[in-house]
Length: 194
Image (cartoon, rainbow, N blue to C red; front, side, top):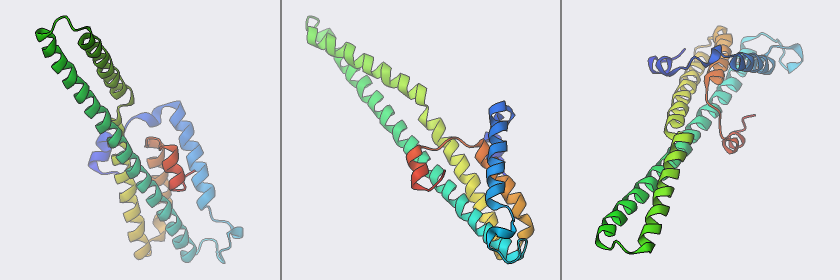
């Protein structure tokens, strides 16, 4: 179900009441979406063709989640790079201004500029700490890999006509969703995820 890396990175969040409730809601949602009913338009509700059709739909949804988490990872990496580069630049400028202060101790403009840039650098460091984009990017990467592995397994099962694994794949899909980090709303819309 999970690779060794994912098991290592997997959090203990499913033990919190919030995630238990989220797991129930997601499982109900997935069961309703992929349940077998006579009114679904299939001639035989439990036939192999019906199950394969549902597996293809699940596989497509898994692929959307995989791509959405990959996109969120890219966004978080960009934010992390931008904040770190800005911190580096402001820190460098403050250091240069500090060295200028020894040459021209009386210049008030340099003092004000140095204080302003030092405050900006501290603010950027705070933002970096608050948003923690690098850690979020890593979590999105781990989740994306889990979805990719599930996508591959579903595809292989469809090719090998292993329709008996469908229920297991639904459970895996739900587990990944419960344990995953949230997606940006724009990314959700772009990949048709509700």
